[in-house]
Length: 169
Image 1 (cartoon, rainbow, N blue to C red):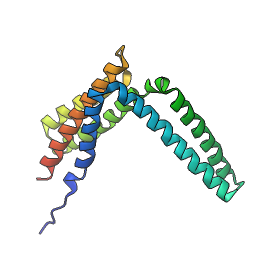
Image 2: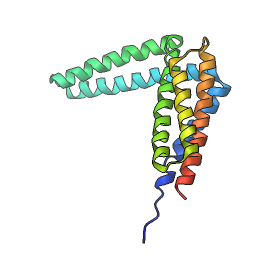
Image 3: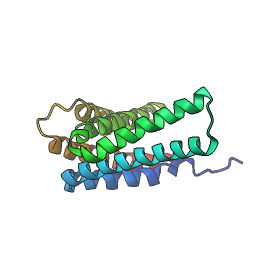
C-alpha cells in the first residue's frame, strides 16, 4: 500500500508569504521600497559583523580567513551605503523581484509540464512573462513597477497554492 505524503503542500506557507508580500507591494509601494532597502542594508551589516567577529576571534592569517575579512569589510561598506542611500538602491529592487518571479514561474512551469496541466502551464507562463516585464523595468515609474511586481506575486502565489492543493489530492 502506498504511503500518502504531504509533499504537495510543502510550498503553501511560502506561497502565502509571497502573496502577503505582493499585497504589501500593491498597497504600499513607496514604503515597500524603503523597507526593503533598509532591511538589505541591515542584513549586509549583520553579515559583515559576523565575519569580522569570527576573524577577530580566530585571528587567523590563512588566505581564506583574510578573504572573509575583506569580504566582510566590503559587505559593511555596501550595507552602510544602502542604509544612507536607500533611494539609489531602490532602483535595483524591482529587478531582483522580477528575477525572483521568473525563477518561481519557471519552477511552476516545469511542474505544469510534468503534470500536463494546460491551465497551470498558461498561468506559470504568464508569471514568467510578468517577471520579465518587471525585471526589464520598461516603466518610467519605479512605483508602478513595484505595484506590477505585487500583482504578479499575488497572482503567482494564488496559482501556486491552487496548483499545490490540486497536486496533493
